[in-house]
Length: 534
Image (cartoon, rainbow, N blue to C red; front, side):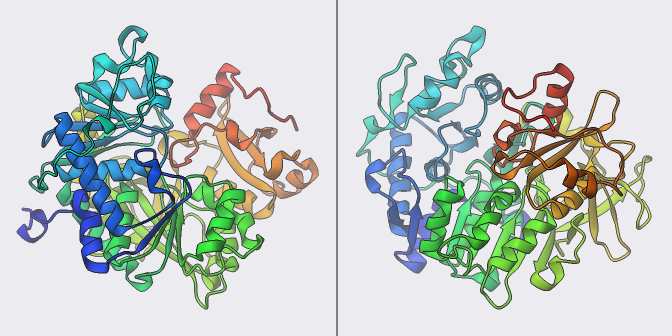
Protein backbone atom coordinates (compact mmCIF):
# COMPACT_ATOMS: atom_id res chain seq x y z
CA UNK A 1 0.00 0.00 0.00
CA UNK A 2 1.31 3.44 -0.91
CA UNK A 3 1.92 5.78 2.00
CA UNK A 4 -0.27 8.90 1.85
CA UNK A 5 2.66 11.07 2.94
CA UNK A 6 4.52 10.20 -0.25
CA UNK A 7 1.66 9.59 -2.70
CA UNK A 8 0.16 13.08 -2.56
CA UNK A 9 3.36 15.13 -2.81
CA UNK A 10 4.34 16.57 -6.18
CA UNK A 11 7.16 18.33 -8.00
CA UNK A 12 5.58 20.87 -10.38
CA UNK A 13 7.81 22.51 -12.98
CA UNK A 14 5.57 25.43 -13.88
CA UNK A 15 6.21 27.51 -10.75
CA UNK A 16 9.88 26.75 -10.04
CA UNK A 17 11.21 30.13 -11.11
CA UNK A 18 8.36 32.00 -9.40
CA UNK A 19 9.03 30.37 -6.04
CA UNK A 20 12.77 30.95 -6.36
CA UNK A 21 12.26 34.62 -7.30
CA UNK A 22 9.89 35.15 -4.37
CA UNK A 23 12.36 33.57 -1.97
CA UNK A 24 15.72 34.88 -3.21
CA UNK A 25 14.99 37.87 -5.42
CA UNK A 26 17.19 38.66 -8.43
CA UNK A 27 19.73 35.85 -8.62
CA UNK A 28 21.69 35.88 -11.91
CA UNK A 29 21.27 33.29 -14.68
CA UNK A 30 24.00 33.58 -17.32
CA UNK A 31 23.74 32.10 -20.82
CA UNK A 32 26.26 31.43 -23.57
CA UNK A 33 23.71 32.16 -26.29
CA UNK A 34 20.49 34.21 -26.37
CA UNK A 35 17.17 32.42 -26.00
CA UNK A 36 15.62 31.67 -29.40
CA UNK A 37 12.19 32.41 -28.00
CA UNK A 38 13.29 35.82 -26.70
CA UNK A 39 16.62 36.86 -28.28
CA UNK A 40 16.30 40.44 -27.10
CA UNK A 41 16.66 39.35 -23.46
CA UNK A 42 20.41 38.93 -23.97
CA UNK A 43 22.78 36.69 -22.05
CA UNK A 44 22.17 37.97 -18.52
CA UNK A 45 18.84 37.17 -16.88
CA UNK A 46 17.67 36.52 -13.35
CA UNK A 47 15.08 34.48 -11.48
CA UNK A 48 12.39 37.23 -11.76
CA UNK A 49 12.97 37.73 -15.50
CA UNK A 50 12.69 34.00 -16.17
CA UNK A 51 9.53 33.76 -14.05
CA UNK A 52 8.03 36.63 -16.07
CA UNK A 53 9.03 34.90 -19.32
CA UNK A 54 7.36 31.68 -18.18
CA UNK A 55 4.20 33.71 -17.43
CA UNK A 56 4.33 35.34 -20.85
CA UNK A 57 4.87 32.10 -22.76
CA UNK A 58 2.19 30.22 -20.81
CA UNK A 59 -0.26 33.01 -21.63
CA UNK A 60 0.65 32.72 -25.32
CA UNK A 61 0.17 28.95 -25.24
CA UNK A 62 -3.24 29.35 -23.60
CA UNK A 63 -4.22 31.96 -26.18
CA UNK A 64 -3.13 29.56 -28.94
CA UNK A 65 -5.57 26.98 -27.53
CA UNK A 66 -3.39 24.71 -25.36
CA UNK A 67 -5.36 23.29 -22.43
CA UNK A 68 -4.67 21.18 -19.30
CA UNK A 69 -3.64 17.53 -19.83
CA UNK A 70 -2.96 18.12 -23.53
CA UNK A 71 0.45 17.02 -24.79
CA UNK A 72 2.86 19.66 -26.03
CA UNK A 73 5.85 18.27 -27.92
CA UNK A 74 8.91 20.53 -27.70
CA UNK A 75 11.42 19.76 -30.44
CA UNK A 76 13.70 22.63 -31.39
CA UNK A 77 17.35 23.55 -31.72
CA UNK A 78 19.35 23.07 -28.55
CA UNK A 79 19.07 26.00 -26.15
CA UNK A 80 18.01 26.77 -22.59
CA UNK A 81 14.62 28.02 -23.79
CA UNK A 82 13.61 24.36 -24.12
CA UNK A 83 13.45 24.40 -20.31
CA UNK A 84 11.61 27.74 -20.21
CA UNK A 85 9.00 26.44 -22.68
CA UNK A 86 8.68 23.25 -20.62
CA UNK A 87 7.92 25.29 -17.51
CA UNK A 88 5.44 27.46 -19.46
CA UNK A 89 3.49 24.45 -20.73
CA UNK A 90 3.53 22.87 -17.28
CA UNK A 91 2.28 26.09 -15.66
CA UNK A 92 -1.09 25.81 -17.47
CA UNK A 93 -1.43 22.08 -16.78
CA UNK A 94 -0.32 20.85 -20.20
CA UNK A 95 2.03 17.87 -20.46
CA UNK A 96 5.39 18.77 -22.04
CA UNK A 97 6.82 15.99 -24.22
CA UNK A 98 10.51 16.68 -24.71
CA UNK A 99 12.14 15.41 -27.90
CA UNK A 100 15.91 15.64 -28.28
CA UNK A 101 17.27 18.17 -30.77
CA UNK A 102 19.56 15.40 -31.98
CA UNK A 103 16.80 13.12 -33.27
CA UNK A 104 16.71 12.60 -37.01
CA UNK A 105 13.48 13.30 -38.88
CA UNK A 106 12.06 9.75 -39.11
CA UNK A 107 12.60 9.03 -35.40
CA UNK A 108 11.11 12.40 -34.40
CA UNK A 109 8.15 11.66 -36.66
CA UNK A 110 7.65 8.23 -35.09
CA UNK A 111 7.66 9.70 -31.57
CA UNK A 112 5.24 12.47 -32.59
CA UNK A 113 2.95 9.76 -33.93
CA UNK A 114 3.02 7.95 -30.58
CA UNK A 115 2.05 11.21 -28.85
CA UNK A 116 -1.28 11.10 -30.73
CA UNK A 117 -1.55 14.53 -32.36
CA UNK A 118 0.17 16.73 -29.79
CA UNK A 119 0.81 20.42 -30.08
CA UNK A 120 4.30 20.96 -31.48
CA UNK A 121 6.63 23.80 -30.47
CA UNK A 122 9.61 24.00 -32.81
CA UNK A 123 11.68 26.37 -34.90
CA UNK A 124 12.38 26.93 -38.58
CA UNK A 125 15.68 25.04 -38.42
CA UNK A 126 13.80 21.85 -37.43
CA UNK A 127 10.57 22.52 -39.30
CA UNK A 128 12.18 23.12 -42.66
CA UNK A 129 15.01 20.66 -41.99
CA UNK A 130 14.59 17.19 -40.43
CA UNK A 131 10.82 17.59 -39.87
CA UNK A 132 9.97 18.58 -43.42
CA UNK A 133 9.87 14.91 -44.44
CA UNK A 134 9.10 13.27 -41.07
CA UNK A 135 5.36 12.89 -41.66
CA UNK A 136 3.41 10.12 -43.39
CA UNK A 137 4.67 9.17 -46.86
CA UNK A 138 7.62 11.52 -46.46
CA UNK A 139 5.47 14.60 -45.98
CA UNK A 140 5.87 17.28 -43.35
CA UNK A 141 4.78 16.82 -39.73
CA UNK A 142 1.50 18.75 -40.05
CA UNK A 143 -0.48 15.52 -40.31
CA UNK A 144 1.02 14.21 -37.04
CA UNK A 145 0.24 17.19 -34.81
CA UNK A 146 -2.67 19.34 -33.77
CA UNK A 147 -0.90 22.60 -34.51
CA UNK A 148 2.66 23.74 -35.18
CA UNK A 149 3.85 26.67 -33.06
CA UNK A 150 7.21 28.24 -33.87
CA UNK A 151 9.57 30.21 -31.64
CA UNK A 152 10.71 32.21 -34.67
CA UNK A 153 8.64 33.67 -37.49
CA UNK A 154 10.84 33.31 -40.55
CA UNK A 155 9.20 32.17 -43.79
CA UNK A 156 9.42 28.55 -44.85
CA UNK A 157 7.66 25.83 -46.86
CA UNK A 158 6.14 24.13 -43.82
CA UNK A 159 3.31 26.07 -42.19
CA UNK A 160 3.57 27.11 -38.57
CA UNK A 161 2.06 29.72 -36.27
CA UNK A 162 4.66 31.97 -34.60
CA UNK A 163 4.25 32.29 -30.83
CA UNK A 164 4.88 35.99 -31.40
CA UNK A 165 1.35 36.19 -32.80
CA UNK A 166 0.01 35.75 -29.25
CA UNK A 167 2.28 38.33 -27.59
CA UNK A 168 0.45 40.38 -25.00
CA UNK A 169 -2.11 37.66 -24.24
CA UNK A 170 -3.59 37.97 -20.74
CA UNK A 171 -1.97 35.89 -18.05
CA UNK A 172 -3.68 32.69 -17.00
CA UNK A 173 -3.73 31.31 -13.47
CA UNK A 174 -1.50 28.27 -12.80
CA UNK A 175 -3.12 24.86 -13.18
CA UNK A 176 -2.05 22.07 -10.84
CA UNK A 177 -2.72 18.52 -11.99
CA UNK A 178 -3.26 15.63 -9.59
CA UNK A 179 0.13 14.32 -8.38
CA UNK A 180 -0.44 10.94 -10.06
CA UNK A 181 -1.55 12.34 -13.41
CA UNK A 182 0.97 12.45 -16.28
CA UNK A 183 2.87 15.74 -16.09
CA UNK A 184 6.01 15.25 -18.21
CA UNK A 185 7.09 12.95 -21.04
CA UNK A 186 10.74 12.35 -21.88
CA UNK A 187 12.31 9.62 -23.94
CA UNK A 188 14.90 6.96 -23.29
CA UNK A 189 18.39 7.31 -24.72
CA UNK A 190 17.76 5.10 -27.72
CA UNK A 191 21.14 3.39 -27.38
CA UNK A 192 19.53 0.05 -28.30
CA UNK A 193 16.96 1.21 -30.86
CA UNK A 194 14.09 3.66 -31.24
CA UNK A 195 13.64 5.63 -28.00
CA UNK A 196 10.72 4.83 -25.70
CA UNK A 197 8.48 7.61 -24.36
CA UNK A 198 8.65 7.68 -20.55
CA UNK A 199 5.61 9.13 -18.74
CA UNK A 200 6.37 10.93 -15.47
CA UNK A 201 3.99 12.37 -12.89
CA UNK A 202 4.51 15.04 -10.25
CA UNK A 203 4.57 12.46 -7.46
CA UNK A 204 7.30 10.22 -8.90
CA UNK A 205 9.31 13.33 -9.76
CA UNK A 206 8.96 14.52 -6.14
CA UNK A 207 10.30 11.18 -4.93
CA UNK A 208 13.37 11.73 -7.09
CA UNK A 209 13.77 15.36 -6.03
CA UNK A 210 13.84 14.89 -2.25
CA UNK A 211 17.03 12.78 -2.01
CA UNK A 212 18.74 15.01 -4.58
CA UNK A 213 17.95 18.05 -2.41
CA UNK A 214 19.66 16.30 0.48
CA UNK A 215 22.72 15.65 -1.68
CA UNK A 216 22.77 19.30 -2.74
CA UNK A 217 22.62 20.73 0.79
CA UNK A 218 26.43 20.98 1.33
CA UNK A 219 26.82 23.24 -1.74
CA UNK A 220 23.66 25.32 -1.27
CA UNK A 221 23.94 28.74 -2.87
CA UNK A 222 27.14 28.03 -4.81
CA UNK A 223 27.25 29.18 -8.45
CA UNK A 224 26.37 26.22 -10.68
CA UNK A 225 27.53 25.72 -14.27
CA UNK A 226 25.54 23.17 -16.27
CA UNK A 227 26.01 21.65 -19.69
CA UNK A 228 23.23 19.07 -19.85
CA UNK A 229 20.48 17.81 -22.09
CA UNK A 230 17.48 20.11 -21.63
CA UNK A 231 15.16 17.26 -22.62
CA UNK A 232 16.29 14.88 -19.86
CA UNK A 233 14.39 14.57 -16.59
CA UNK A 234 17.66 14.79 -14.62
CA UNK A 235 18.10 18.40 -15.76
CA UNK A 236 14.77 19.43 -14.21
CA UNK A 237 15.51 17.76 -10.90
CA UNK A 238 18.91 19.41 -10.71
CA UNK A 239 17.33 22.74 -11.65
CA UNK A 240 14.76 22.22 -8.88
CA UNK A 241 17.55 21.61 -6.35
CA UNK A 242 19.56 24.66 -7.41
CA UNK A 243 16.55 27.00 -7.45
CA UNK A 244 15.56 25.72 -4.01
CA UNK A 245 18.94 26.88 -2.67
CA UNK A 246 19.15 30.13 -4.64
CA UNK A 247 22.21 29.25 -6.69
CA UNK A 248 23.39 31.58 -9.48
CA UNK A 249 23.27 29.60 -12.74
CA UNK A 250 25.50 29.39 -15.80
CA UNK A 251 23.84 27.54 -18.70
CA UNK A 252 26.29 26.19 -21.30
CA UNK A 253 25.08 25.00 -24.70
CA UNK A 254 28.45 24.80 -26.47
CA UNK A 255 30.79 22.35 -24.65
CA UNK A 256 33.86 23.13 -26.75
CA UNK A 257 36.64 23.88 -24.24
CA UNK A 258 37.58 26.96 -26.26
CA UNK A 259 34.11 28.38 -25.56
CA UNK A 260 33.29 26.82 -22.18
CA UNK A 261 36.69 27.47 -20.60
CA UNK A 262 36.53 31.29 -20.63
CA UNK A 263 32.91 31.20 -19.45
CA UNK A 264 33.80 28.97 -16.50
CA UNK A 265 36.86 31.10 -15.71
CA UNK A 266 34.69 34.24 -15.68
CA UNK A 267 32.03 32.83 -13.31
CA UNK A 268 34.14 30.56 -11.07
CA UNK A 269 31.40 27.99 -10.38
CA UNK A 270 31.42 25.95 -7.19
CA UNK A 271 29.20 23.31 -8.84
CA UNK A 272 29.74 21.83 -12.30
CA UNK A 273 27.57 19.14 -13.85
CA UNK A 274 27.65 17.69 -17.34
CA UNK A 275 27.65 14.36 -19.14
CA UNK A 276 30.54 11.94 -18.47
CA UNK A 277 31.82 12.24 -22.05
CA UNK A 278 31.85 16.03 -21.75
CA UNK A 279 33.88 15.72 -18.57
CA UNK A 280 36.42 13.70 -20.57
CA UNK A 281 36.55 16.58 -23.05
CA UNK A 282 36.92 19.05 -20.18
CA UNK A 283 39.95 17.25 -18.75
CA UNK A 284 42.00 19.73 -20.78
CA UNK A 285 40.45 22.58 -18.76
CA UNK A 286 42.36 21.33 -15.72
CA UNK A 287 45.38 23.33 -16.88
CA UNK A 288 43.63 25.90 -19.10
CA UNK A 289 44.30 29.65 -18.87
CA UNK A 290 42.35 31.32 -16.09
CA UNK A 291 42.02 28.07 -14.09
CA UNK A 292 38.33 27.61 -15.01
CA UNK A 293 37.84 24.68 -12.63
CA UNK A 294 39.81 26.07 -9.71
CA UNK A 295 36.82 27.02 -7.56
CA UNK A 296 34.76 23.85 -8.08
CA UNK A 297 33.69 22.21 -4.86
CA UNK A 298 31.31 19.64 -6.33
CA UNK A 299 31.15 17.92 -9.71
CA UNK A 300 28.01 16.03 -10.70
CA UNK A 301 28.00 13.13 -13.15
CA UNK A 302 25.07 11.04 -14.23
CA UNK A 303 23.68 9.37 -17.41
CA UNK A 304 26.63 6.94 -17.60
CA UNK A 305 29.62 5.65 -15.62
CA UNK A 306 32.61 8.00 -15.53
CA UNK A 307 36.24 6.99 -16.11
CA UNK A 308 38.49 7.07 -12.98
CA UNK A 309 41.15 9.01 -14.91
CA UNK A 310 38.64 11.76 -15.57
CA UNK A 311 37.60 11.92 -11.91
CA UNK A 312 41.20 12.30 -10.79
CA UNK A 313 41.93 15.10 -13.26
CA UNK A 314 38.80 17.03 -12.42
CA UNK A 315 39.35 16.86 -8.67
CA UNK A 316 43.01 17.72 -9.14
CA UNK A 317 42.04 20.90 -11.04
CA UNK A 318 40.16 22.34 -8.06
CA UNK A 319 41.94 24.57 -5.55
CA UNK A 320 39.21 24.01 -2.96
CA UNK A 321 40.29 22.23 0.20
CA UNK A 322 38.15 19.12 -0.19
CA UNK A 323 36.32 18.92 -3.53
CA UNK A 324 34.26 15.90 -4.49
CA UNK A 325 32.47 14.32 -7.42
CA UNK A 326 29.09 12.69 -6.96
CA UNK A 327 28.04 10.04 -9.43
CA UNK A 328 24.42 8.96 -9.83
CA UNK A 329 23.49 5.65 -11.42
CA UNK A 330 20.02 5.21 -12.87
CA UNK A 331 17.99 5.77 -16.01
CA UNK A 332 15.12 7.87 -17.32
CA UNK A 333 12.63 5.28 -16.15
CA UNK A 334 13.78 5.19 -12.53
CA UNK A 335 15.73 8.32 -11.78
CA UNK A 336 18.88 7.77 -9.71
CA UNK A 337 18.88 4.48 -7.83
CA UNK A 338 22.47 4.50 -6.57
CA UNK A 339 25.01 7.18 -5.67
CA UNK A 340 28.74 7.35 -5.09
CA UNK A 341 31.05 10.08 -3.77
CA UNK A 342 34.63 10.49 -4.95
CA UNK A 343 37.26 12.55 -3.13
CA UNK A 344 40.83 13.34 -4.13
CA UNK A 345 42.16 10.73 -1.74
CA UNK A 346 39.71 8.02 -2.74
CA UNK A 347 39.55 8.59 -6.50
CA UNK A 348 42.94 7.04 -7.25
CA UNK A 349 42.08 3.73 -5.62
CA UNK A 350 38.35 3.51 -6.34
CA UNK A 351 37.15 0.78 -8.71
CA UNK A 352 35.63 2.58 -11.70
CA UNK A 353 33.00 -0.14 -11.97
CA UNK A 354 31.61 0.67 -8.52
CA UNK A 355 28.63 2.97 -9.08
CA UNK A 356 27.54 3.31 -5.48
CA UNK A 357 24.89 2.13 -3.09
CA UNK A 358 21.11 2.44 -2.95
CA UNK A 359 19.59 5.72 -1.73
CA UNK A 360 18.35 5.08 1.84
CA UNK A 361 14.58 5.35 2.15
CA UNK A 362 14.02 5.83 -1.58
CA UNK A 363 15.58 2.99 -3.58
CA UNK A 364 16.57 -0.64 -3.20
CA UNK A 365 18.87 -2.66 -5.47
CA UNK A 366 19.35 -6.36 -6.00
CA UNK A 367 21.13 -8.71 -8.40
CA UNK A 368 18.94 -11.40 -9.97
CA UNK A 369 20.25 -14.68 -11.34
CA UNK A 370 18.96 -16.44 -14.46
CA UNK A 371 15.95 -17.79 -12.53
CA UNK A 372 14.95 -14.36 -11.24
CA UNK A 373 16.07 -15.05 -7.66
CA UNK A 374 18.39 -12.80 -5.68
CA UNK A 375 22.00 -13.71 -6.40
CA UNK A 376 24.61 -14.12 -3.69
CA UNK A 377 27.03 -11.28 -2.92
CA UNK A 378 29.81 -11.15 -5.50
CA UNK A 379 27.83 -13.15 -8.07
CA UNK A 380 27.14 -11.49 -11.42
CA UNK A 381 23.58 -11.13 -12.64
CA UNK A 382 20.95 -8.68 -13.83
CA UNK A 383 20.67 -5.41 -11.93
CA UNK A 384 17.16 -4.69 -10.66
CA UNK A 385 15.85 -1.72 -8.67
CA UNK A 386 12.80 -0.85 -6.63
CA UNK A 387 12.03 2.88 -6.40
CA UNK A 388 9.15 5.28 -5.80
CA UNK A 389 10.58 7.40 -8.59
CA UNK A 390 9.67 4.93 -11.33
CA UNK A 391 7.76 6.29 -14.33
CA UNK A 392 4.07 5.51 -14.79
CA UNK A 393 4.45 3.72 -18.13
CA UNK A 394 5.87 3.82 -21.64
CA UNK A 395 3.45 5.75 -23.81
CA UNK A 396 2.03 3.39 -26.43
CA UNK A 397 4.17 0.48 -25.22
CA UNK A 398 2.62 -0.79 -21.99
CA UNK A 399 3.63 -4.39 -22.77
CA UNK A 400 7.29 -3.35 -23.00
CA UNK A 401 6.99 -1.55 -19.66
CA UNK A 402 5.35 -4.54 -17.98
CA UNK A 403 8.03 -6.91 -19.27
CA UNK A 404 10.68 -4.92 -17.40
CA UNK A 405 8.83 -5.30 -14.08
CA UNK A 406 9.06 -8.36 -11.87
CA UNK A 407 7.15 -8.21 -8.57
CA UNK A 408 7.82 -4.48 -8.34
CA UNK A 409 11.51 -4.80 -9.33
CA UNK A 410 12.55 -2.86 -12.43
CA UNK A 411 15.09 -4.54 -14.71
CA UNK A 412 17.78 -1.96 -15.48
CA UNK A 413 19.14 -3.81 -18.53
CA UNK A 414 22.64 -3.92 -16.99
CA UNK A 415 24.79 -6.74 -15.66
CA UNK A 416 26.64 -6.35 -12.38
CA UNK A 417 27.15 -7.63 -8.86
CA UNK A 418 26.89 -6.41 -5.26
CA UNK A 419 29.40 -6.62 -2.45
CA UNK A 420 28.53 -7.94 1.01
CA UNK A 421 27.95 -4.34 2.10
CA UNK A 422 25.61 -3.43 -0.76
CA UNK A 423 28.08 -1.71 -3.10
CA UNK A 424 26.89 -2.01 -6.70
CA UNK A 425 29.41 -2.84 -9.44
CA UNK A 426 28.43 -2.30 -13.08
CA UNK A 427 29.86 -4.69 -15.65
CA UNK A 428 28.11 -4.13 -19.00
CA UNK A 429 24.75 -3.63 -20.64
CA UNK A 430 23.20 -7.06 -21.17
CA UNK A 431 23.05 -6.48 -24.91
CA UNK A 432 26.78 -5.53 -25.08
CA UNK A 433 28.25 -8.59 -23.36
CA UNK A 434 31.23 -10.34 -25.03
CA UNK A 435 31.93 -13.86 -23.78
CA UNK A 436 35.72 -13.49 -23.88
CA UNK A 437 35.62 -10.45 -21.59
CA UNK A 438 34.34 -10.31 -18.04
CA UNK A 439 33.57 -6.61 -18.48
CA UNK A 440 34.06 -4.46 -21.58
CA UNK A 441 33.64 -1.34 -19.45
CA UNK A 442 36.39 -2.38 -17.04
CA UNK A 443 38.88 -2.88 -19.88
CA UNK A 444 37.90 0.51 -21.29
CA UNK A 445 38.59 2.13 -17.91
CA UNK A 446 41.99 0.46 -17.71
CA UNK A 447 42.99 1.68 -21.18
CA UNK A 448 41.74 5.21 -20.54
CA UNK A 449 43.95 5.29 -17.44
CA UNK A 450 47.00 3.86 -19.20
CA UNK A 451 46.73 5.94 -22.39
CA UNK A 452 46.15 9.55 -21.45
CA UNK A 453 45.92 10.53 -25.13
CA UNK A 454 42.63 8.63 -25.54
CA UNK A 455 39.49 10.74 -25.85
CA UNK A 456 37.25 7.67 -25.88
CA UNK A 457 37.38 3.91 -26.32
CA UNK A 458 34.42 1.66 -27.02
CA UNK A 459 34.78 -2.13 -27.20
CA UNK A 460 32.04 -3.82 -29.24
CA UNK A 461 31.52 -7.35 -30.58
CA UNK A 462 32.69 -7.99 -34.14
CA UNK A 463 31.38 -10.41 -36.74
CA UNK A 464 32.69 -13.42 -34.80
CA UNK A 465 31.81 -11.87 -31.41
CA UNK A 466 35.48 -10.93 -30.96
CA UNK A 467 36.19 -7.70 -29.01
CA UNK A 468 36.74 -4.81 -31.44
CA UNK A 469 38.14 -1.61 -29.87
CA UNK A 470 37.08 1.65 -31.50
CA UNK A 471 39.35 4.43 -30.25
CA UNK A 472 39.37 8.22 -30.48
CA UNK A 473 42.57 10.17 -29.83
CA UNK A 474 42.70 13.76 -28.63
CA UNK A 475 43.32 16.16 -31.48
CA UNK A 476 42.70 13.31 -33.95
CA UNK A 477 46.37 12.38 -33.79
CA UNK A 478 47.28 8.88 -35.05
CA UNK A 479 47.22 6.23 -32.35
CA UNK A 480 50.70 5.19 -31.21
CA UNK A 481 50.56 1.44 -31.90
CA UNK A 482 53.62 0.76 -29.75
CA UNK A 483 51.97 2.34 -26.72
CA UNK A 484 48.75 0.48 -27.51
CA UNK A 485 50.54 -2.87 -27.62
CA UNK A 486 52.27 -2.16 -24.31
CA UNK A 487 49.00 -1.08 -22.67
CA UNK A 488 47.10 -4.20 -23.78
CA UNK A 489 49.71 -6.87 -23.04
CA UNK A 490 47.96 -8.21 -19.93
CA UNK A 491 44.39 -7.66 -21.18
CA UNK A 492 42.08 -10.08 -22.99
CA UNK A 493 42.93 -10.53 -26.66
CA UNK A 494 41.25 -7.97 -28.92
CA UNK A 495 41.04 -7.24 -32.62
CA UNK A 496 43.21 -4.56 -34.20
CA UNK A 497 41.86 -1.22 -32.98
CA UNK A 498 39.90 1.03 -35.32
CA UNK A 499 40.57 4.74 -34.93
CA UNK A 500 37.63 7.10 -35.52
CA UNK A 501 37.09 10.76 -34.89
CA UNK A 502 34.97 11.35 -31.78
CA UNK A 503 32.42 13.26 -33.85
CA UNK A 504 31.91 10.13 -35.98
CA UNK A 505 30.74 8.07 -33.00
CA UNK A 506 26.94 7.78 -32.95
CA UNK A 507 25.75 9.40 -29.71
CA UNK A 508 22.58 10.23 -27.83
CA UNK A 509 21.60 13.72 -26.61
CA UNK A 510 23.54 13.00 -23.39
CA UNK A 511 26.61 11.91 -25.40
CA UNK A 512 26.17 8.22 -24.58
CA UNK A 513 27.78 6.11 -27.27
CA UNK A 514 25.31 4.03 -29.28
CA UNK A 515 27.20 0.76 -29.17
CA UNK A 516 24.52 -1.19 -31.02
CA UNK A 517 24.73 1.33 -33.83
CA UNK A 518 28.51 0.87 -34.02
CA UNK A 519 28.02 -2.90 -34.26
CA UNK A 520 25.58 -2.34 -37.13
CA UNK A 521 28.01 0.01 -38.88
CA UNK A 522 30.81 -2.55 -38.60
CA UNK A 523 28.59 -5.36 -39.89
CA UNK A 524 27.42 -3.32 -42.88
CA UNK A 525 30.76 -1.73 -43.60
CA UNK A 526 29.17 1.69 -43.11
CA UNK A 527 32.29 3.15 -41.54
CA UNK A 528 33.07 6.87 -41.25
CA UNK A 529 34.63 8.32 -44.39
CA UNK A 530 37.29 10.20 -42.43
CA UNK A 531 38.68 7.45 -40.21
CA UNK A 532 42.19 6.42 -39.32
CA UNK A 533 43.77 3.04 -39.96
CA UNK A 534 46.28 1.88 -37.36
